[in-house]
Length: 235
Image (cartoon, rainbow, N blue to C red):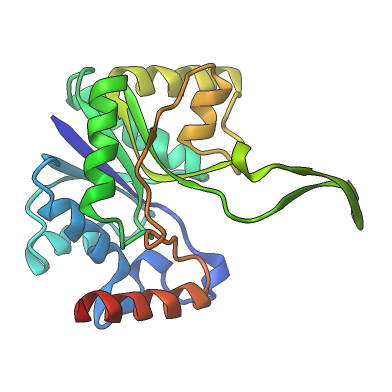
């Protein structure tokens, strides 16, 4: 079984909105719903769990009927950090599903994930035990010598950008979160499941990525999202 864990636990301070960014409406539909609809329509995904910012659980519950999200099985409260939110969802899944099942972790504010990416992440996990959406890194990255200068860069052919969706075997990722929080490894404010797994010694396996799979964190991202929606609708 494949369970999607959609992370909607953030408040989105950078958006400067009155509502959490995942509930901001674009063309009269919440961003989170665009994301949920992708997983709802994908035949490889069996069930959906949403990790929700506290106080918005009833809103997410209403999506089941209002937007026909039939696969939504549970709404789990988010934590104080991103890693706590993901851990809460993983703990719920580990208690209610088999350790051999697959959990696909995805940011609720990445609404343009497509089936090609999602399917390959799941297929890679079935073969290797995990699969992370990845893309070649196309910018130049320099290492700071001081706050104002540099003398060293990292060659681009050594870099890969890893984002969500990410798929893991339930038993392995659940045990990893227990270890991480017990030892304070891979649980910093900037950590995510992929970085935590590497810090704990796990090898990650690359799956397909897409440049359309943008994360909506600033008002400019919303503008880009609207433009991409228009392009997709006209295809």
